[in-house]
Length: 113
Length: 113
Image (cartoon, rainbow over all chains, first blue to last red; front, side):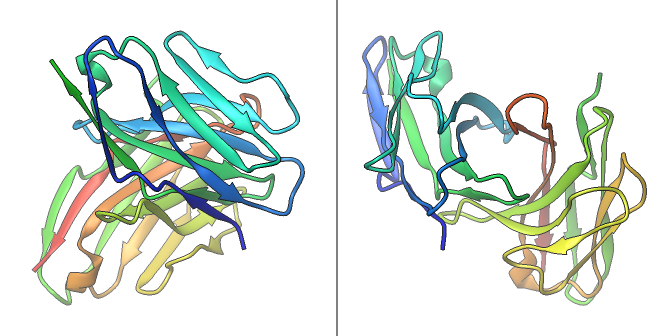
C-alpha cells in the first residue's frame, strides 16, 4: 500500500529564517510524482513545488526547494527567508501514474515576527 | 479563466437531509476528484472520474454518490446527511500537461447537525 507520512504536526520558524518540513512515503513504483501543497487560512490549496521521481535534480521554486532522496523515500521541503505569508498548512502528496493521489496529514507552519 | 469553481461555499444541513455539491472546471481537464478534509487526516479521496462518463470509488465513498455530467462538471451528492459527514469538501481537476498537477476549488464547509 502507498502511504505518505508527515511526522511534524506543527513547526515554527522566525521570520527570515529557514525551516525544513519532512515527508516520507512508501511506494513500490519507480515512476511517480511528488508534490507540496500549501493551504493558507483562506482554505485554497496552492501548489508549491513538484518533483518527478525520474529526475535526480532537486526541484526549486524561488525560496522553496526540496531534498528528494529516492532511495530513502524522503521528500522534504525547505523554505528559505521565511515570510509571514508562508504561515499555512503544508501537505505532501504522492501520485504514481494511476488516477489517485495520496496526501499526508499535513504540517502547520507558524511564522514568528 | 475561473479554474475550478465550487458551490456552495458553506452549508448547514440537518441529519437526514440531502444536498448536491457542484463543481465545474474550465481547463479542459479529463480527470476530476472529490476529497474531504478533516482535522488531522489530510485529504481523503471520496470519488474520482478519470474521464467523462466514468466514475470510481476512492478511499471513503460510503454515503456519497457522484455524477460526471459532462467534461466540465462533477457533482457530489449526499442522499441522507449524517453528522460524520461534517467536513470541508474539495473538488479538483488534473492536468496531464503540467506534470500531473491538481487544481483545487475553494472548498465547501459542510456542517451536519
